[in-house]
Length: 117
Image (cartoon, rainbow, N blue to C red; front, side, top):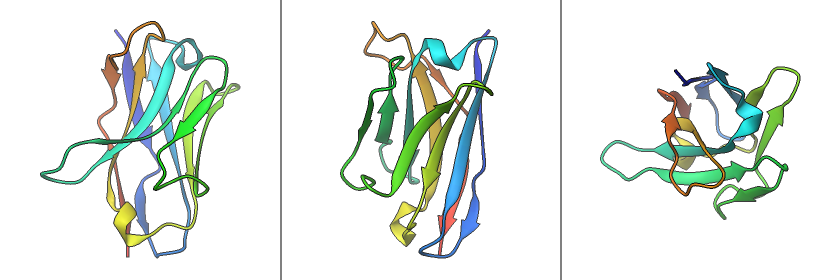
């Protein structure tokens, strides 16, 4: 049974940084295409960044240059380094995993809250 668990969220002032982590149980993170998304209450989830098994990354324009998605191979953990945070980055952040041959993210974490004031 695959489970993803996010951590690292919290409250920070505008301009500050946070580092989110996503650990997997029952699986190896490196075997999947991974993503970070965020969601505000009442709004649709927004995909922010993706990374595939070859390390190719993509970013949505709103976070490009500020956020960095990566995989810590030693810890088999997905990370999202968030710098120059803005109040509009306030949201619940989720990691997700999919088989790279599938277009559907099959596994989701429970989310971690980020609040920027």
